[in-house]
Amino acid sequence: GPPCPSDWLVLQVPARALLEGDTVTLRYMGWRNPLVTSVSFYCDGKELATLGNGTELSLSPLTLNHRGHYHCRISVEIWGWKNSVQVKVTVQSEHPTAANPDT
Image 1 (tube, rainbow, N blue to C red):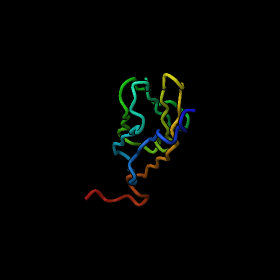
Image 2: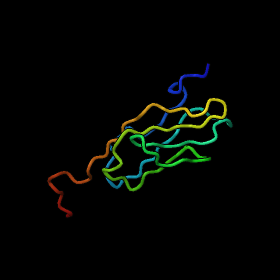
Image 3: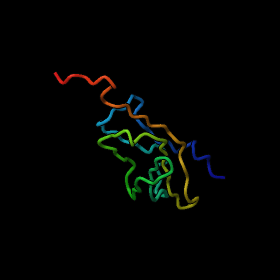
Image 4: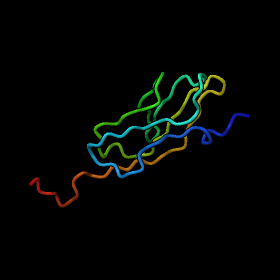
């Protein structure tokens, strides 16, 4: 049968702490195959974008609203839709509670 999706479908996000105002690129890593007809990106189950050709989605500027669990879904001609495992994206407020002076 078809391989387990998590074996070959990974959504890659930076492993560092993300701050408000950053740019983050979600990158679909995995199966490079002409049978993959589109890649969709989701946050907490809500669709963010569907790319007919392309494997990256940029979130910029980041806000605290971008926190959540992300996954991508690819459409494969033979097997239909396949989901990646979810990855958690955390966004930290750029300014701690004690606001930093500008000077």
